[in-house]
Image (cartoon, rainbow, N blue to C red):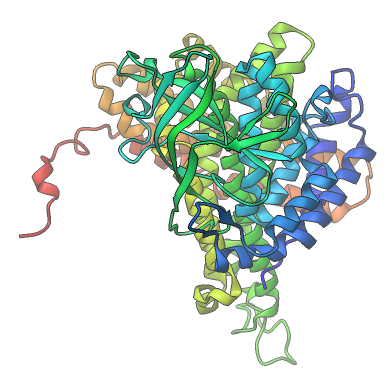
Length: 601
């Protein structure tokens, strides 16, 4: 059976040392986030995810979810009991407001737990994960009555939530949706239509499921400007908070998927289901984007979380599996062969995985801190700056980390050789589960276009310039330290490639928009490489300070410095090749007529 153990030493390093969370103790919600409390949460969260959730991962993959004739769905063996433990322990309340029954802790702490959940069992982690997005949308756009009715029980885990966007005939182009919302005399609406790909759409783990559904009211514009958002509970809720009759929403089928079999991804049929508008009419897409942005951060985390789980298993296998001899001579002369861990190509795969997962973890936890600061920083200027930086980087988190996460999971499968292709070892599940993260919550090509078509120009380009200045400042400060100068110099060159690519877009995208579309994916990866380089420089700086101060755990900090140098020399040079691809433009990409792609005679 595959193994998983929460990387708590790395969590503590990033949260307590690199981010220095205690230094924000003057901000709301941070005052109780002491280092001791953080460490305790990480320790207990690690035990829960490794001992309770991880053992169910293969079971969920093998059993999947079962739909019954009445439209109900049963989750895999053990899922319901594990979710009860999750709810009773209050794990879902960590970062929610105290007035809703939450603990009010910073988002960055909750994000660490989400990573553990996803690494241990991505399918299971999606049930509370989608609920969080629905909570955020209702908090922002719901009426006082809707908040009072739904949020406390969603925060507690008694009820879960979903988001319903996609329909059989449309995905990203939501202006084409056909689901209807007919107004009723009592202020409610009757929702009719079909939604597909609805994660956690029907299951047996919670008393009620609160669906947030995009639909169009009569006479609404035939575009994305005509979409409204509705809250549609599985069971209607009485005025006293008790559950009433079953609403007109049912699971028509469960999607047959490549992976995440333990999550009930449903086709949901709305047959005159009763719903209530959330926010303003025809402004539903803006409300839904609150959920989508939350989900995109979580999806980016899923990418490297699967890579982390695959990496842990690959390391264990490489230390145990014996084949061949080290190129420099036998390491274990008394054995017939050395562990494959000694071979440089295996080390290449493992080092690539190590620096990607650790760099991505720092990136996402740093981003979660920006989410906290966007709401709780002392000044409006600081809050705005954090919000804009997070907005700029969200498509990079989602797109880059899921692309590289899938690649890493595949590479870890490669470490196992033929055994990686055999189901009992569990490596193919990591690959299959990681694949969806590149697709849902906006396919990665869409993320690249969001980054280059919208985010680069936001605030007249001020936000991307603020990003450049932030990285430049870190580089300049690092150059005076001999332990950091090589990393800083390589990062400076990669940042130069990104600046040049940005300028090329400015000079060439206006005259031919296809030049932007043709290079957007390359740009997203350049920015991903640079951002992880920035995180590695910050981690290297922290490790160097700890070593110079005589801190214990010397081997850990020295490993951070080696890993930072490896990332700088092996990953950052790719930014130059990506820029040259980008600057090739769209001419040859778009030149051939459609029939030239038909290979059949």
